[in-house]
Length: 198
Image 1: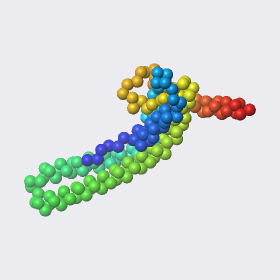
Image 2: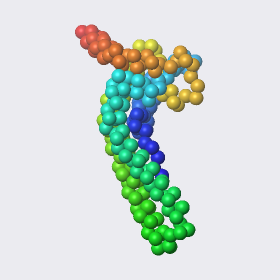
Image 3: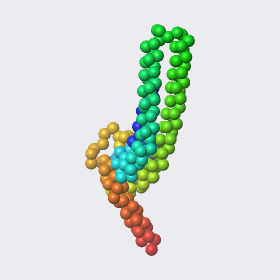
């Protein structure tokens, strides 16, 4: 059987890359006493999908891949029914006829699995093209929030079994992303560096 492939979520590889980027902020942070360390979390996957760019990316993926997903589902259902039909007729078919039908069914199933694998690869590639820039921009905003608010470590929320609600910066990051707050801050940082150089 062929499992359904989720179309509206970022590929696992991209999520791992984003999580690694968030955790890397901790490695770049200065060493301080454990009691003084300020920690927060961001739900990277949720944040990416809630940005305006992320919503558009999901709509694009849906438009590109939903029809093909439906075709794969229909073929899978067809093969399931064919298998059930073969089992029902196994007692009345000759051994030769039964073997021929089973071989034909197995061939079609292998072909479907191959198509499904190719479909998944293409889907993940397109997801990477659409969500990669979103994740990159979001990591800049996360780093800027950490610097501005004095957080030494910002972790991916998925890596934390429990986190206090006020330490979850996900919605703040999404809002900054959607309003271009990260870009404004970036301009401010550049201005500060320019003033320092004078």
